[in-house]
Length: 440
Length: 68
Image (cartoon, rainbow over all chains, first blue to last red; front, top):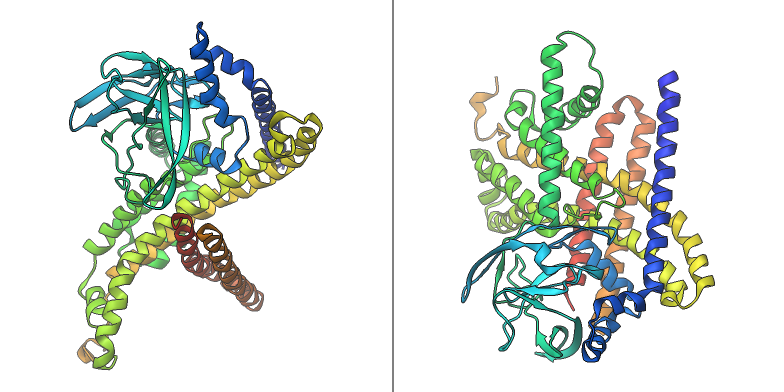
């Protein structure tokens, strides 16, 4: 009873902290918006032309754009910024076919407001948190070069309007190449001239979460060795509860009592990795990472599941895909086509579901925070800002509560679906008409 | 203009998924009310089915994001 009360108090306090921290974040953000002009003057340089250029470059941010802000905050970045004050430098590993490898720290970019780099290094610049390359003639390809701002123009390429970004150096505009993406620019990002293998914000957060999980599980394992036949305590308790839940509710019912042990490590790794990243992304201040909301991360997880399922597929599984038993012959090819599509749609939905749910939660929170700037008319109206804040705080708090549930549900759903796919693949049917002798 | 049509498509997909998940949830609650002792199995099946319904809606929503 005593413990129950203290848990409830801790629970309420943690939410108070969330409100408080959210409020702090909002305040600091709105102050930033109001003082936008003074920020820009710190970006600028002594002589007049540079100041003008810097101002032009930041004009794009003067009017608040909720969609662009949300997309910027949920996407991966080459710097790890905590509340716009602390910037943790990350290693940059870049390769351009015409130039070769480049290794340096992202601190060379001197990232400032909005994660824009104040200087270029070896022909690379940092814009909105991601690395771009400048290939225009005249731009210094070696060493540091000052960037006084960024600007963008809308150009029509192949009938589509696209925002093309330019870096301003020595009063001249240089075109930025598209950022390096996993899809190679096929999905609309634009083909680019370099490859980015850097440790990004998402990669670093994944490493941090993995190390944390290794620590938690090895300490729990040690506790089992030391406290043999005694009740579990501390972290061991938390881990054991979730572990036995996944084993008894997911692994055993879906895979089967005699085969589940082989797949238990995979299911547990998937569950705790996704849960850890989901919850880590919910912590205010800590950069608001969105690793499980990133399609590349979920695609890797889905690919692992795809290979595990298909490499463990038994004869019956493949028979049900290519030549479904117990149906008329003319239906068999049709079913085979559907089943082969299903083979790829299953991991595809795994990938989209996780990324979609987590990103949607982050976007909802960012949109509610954005209400302040919409009501406050981008910092022009203080009264509107106050109304927006009064609306945004309860909505954000509500959304964060929902997001904690979603973090658990989505990691559980990913695990339960993985288990059901594996279960379907390794199941050995005994069809009455095929093997009558096996039925005793 | 295509953006608006894509948004309408995403909305339609969400309506479909909403009806589907609502039916899954409602029937599961009925089943649990009838047989409370089987609530664990029913809950697992419910989440699995809801995830399948949601998967179809998510494909539609993501297509509407990528079609510009």
